[in-house]
Image (cartoon, rainbow, N blue to C red; front, top):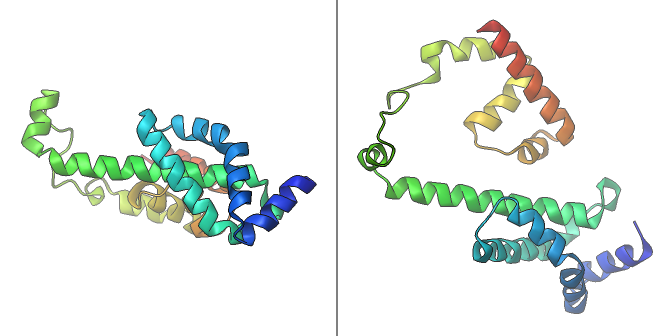
Length: 177
C-alpha cells in the first residue's frame, strides 16, 4: 500500500471528514463504474454508490491492508450494495406482480408447479453425497441467496475457494443426475 493510501486510511479511521472527501474524489468514478455494471439506471446507481460510501465510512475500521488495497475493499462493499439493491428491487416487483399477472405478461405457464420442492428430484440425496464444504457452498448460493463473496465471508475462506467448491460440486451433481 502506498504512503498516501496508508495516510488516507489512518485519517479515515479517525473520522476525518476531509479524508472522506478526498477518498470520494479519488475513487468516485471508478466505484460508480463498478456499480453501473450491475445497476443500469443512472439515478439508482448514484444512490447505491452513496450507500456504498456510507458503508465504507462506517466500516473503515474493519479494513485490513494485508488483505488487499483500499480500492478493492471499497469496490467489494459497493458491489455488494448494488447486489442488495437489485435483490430488494426484485422482491418489491415480485410482491407487486401476482402469479396471474405474471402469466399474462409472459403468455406462458410456469415451468414447475408452485408446490415444487427439491426433494421431488432427490436433490437432498444428491447433496448428501457431496463433501460438507461443497454442499454448504451450494446451499448458501442457491437456497440461501448469497453471492459468492458473501459465501466466502460466511465460510471464512477465499473467494477463489468458494468458486472452486461450487464448480466441483456442480460437476459432481451433473455426473450423478
